[in-house]
Amino acid sequence: MDTLFWRLKDENLLPRKYFEVDFPMIVARKIHNIKSKPPLSKPIMESHSGDSLLIDSHSLDSSRYSIVGADLRSSSDLEEKLRKHSLDTHLPTLLVAECVLVYMTPQQSASLLKWAASTFPVAMVINYEQVNMRDRFGQIMIENLQRRHCNLAGVELCSSLDSQRERLLGSGWDNAHAVDMMKVYSFLPQADVKRIEALEFLDEKELFEQLMQHYCICWASKDSSNLGLANIDF
Ligand SMILES: C[S@@+](CC[C@H](N)C(=O)[O-])C[C@H]1O[C@@H](n2cnc3c(N)ncnc32)[C@H](O)[C@@H]1O
Image 1 (cartoon, rainbow, N blue to C red):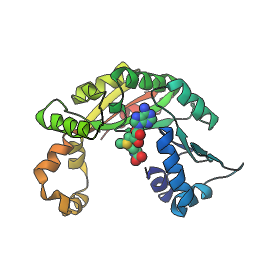
Image 2: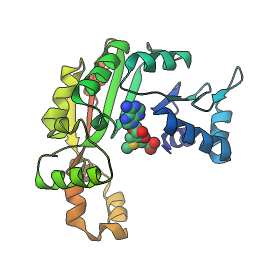
Image 3: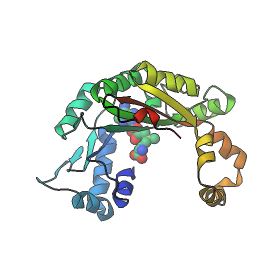
Image 4: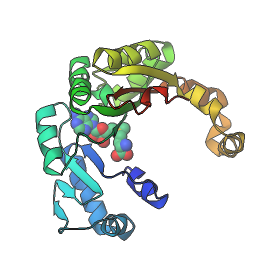
């Protein structure tokens, strides 16, 4: 379960509307969890106003939270479903992908990113996924995932920070940046770092650092209203 909506609600940081997209089968599981667990359903009800909330086995639409079962490789179907849930493409929009583009071929992820760049005039995309996958450690990660029947069809675009940035720039986005998670880790407040490092799993510091060097955050923007999105940086 992706808890971002609930954490944003707790901190009073909800956007006008939060949309989540995943395969219909996964969405059905998430909706079942939402329906059966009051800590998940209550914040959705609390933030809902207006007409009655729409819910079936593969989608849920409330005024602030919507979850849609769709294949991201088909932008037209995706857009139709999002628009049915009152997506307003003219509002400034943040698109977040967490280890999802890597499961698509480079053509499929480029087509999704191009659709997003041409659909949202004021937007930022953030992509969190693997990087530096051509080195020995990256190859071991690929082999481990293949053993679990996870085929990383788009792994060639995860070969470097440059390849990640270039995908965004080549798909109609401006001002692309990418940093590996070791760098992100070095920017965290030292008190948090100490707390995290005291956890048992960090006994293997070298392994942790190698893992951090193999994940990255990339971001890019489109800013027809000159909101200053290009200046957002670490
Ligand atoms: C690493 S998980 C991120 C999950 C999310 N942050 C969460 O906690 O539920 C990647 C997700 O991408 C979804 N995914 C992969 N390819 C997809 C596609 N073509 N269309 C829709 N969802 C896809 C997978 O089903 C998986 O739930």
